[in-house]
Length: 339
Image (tube, rainbow, N blue to C red; front, side):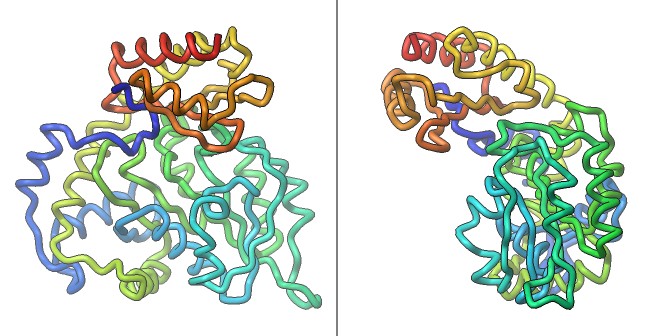
């Protein structure tokens, strides 16, 4: 099977498994796992922040971060197709008591002035805006990268209005490689970030919340309350450290394969290769006879796994475990089906 459902389907490499096996461990609930402590400090330093906290999942990392910057009863602004709105099952409202208001789906193409106009200050008979969340890279936006200048403009707006800025940076590594913006430059723009190790980088599990020391101290309590307190988690942190040390720059290979796939499928009118900047290839089937679930099912019958993201949007994702042979197989099968 050529598996292009997600970049979460990767398996640890031999080197990563060796690093996991050799990891020094302790009890992280007591704060004495040396590997995870060192890893958290390393990630915080990469982004220019004071502290970070290892969590089991990206959803938990996002929800902790949102609760750090939005008090219960406060408002979060986000895109209508943002992961924190679409794929986290209402967690912001359920666990954080957070009211969410969204702007229309634009993917990575943010209209900062439009967002600025949505901010509601305290003192009116409406829920005050406490924070804005953006996604880098953008999942339903086809792996789009928000330009640095746009984010800097949004930061200036947030500062002027006194609201916080959160980055769902599950695939921020791809933005870093695609645009050459350093992780520290991204870190300087946000009050909190979440970053994922199992999307693209090949680690089996894990995300981190990044922020100030005071916020991460509170985040540790939130993680425990959510059931995320872990024991000898250095084994997993070692996989994450290996991923950061060995798998970031190779993301260019995934980007190149994604572009090759997009160019091969472009003649069928379902994708614009110029819009494929990273490792996600969205297929717009709005004008095609096949819908996304049908295409996905037919491709699976022929040994190619893809994802139906929306009724008329399918997605292909290149990753560490996808080689040229599997890429060619996917192109051949999908070309036959789309024709």
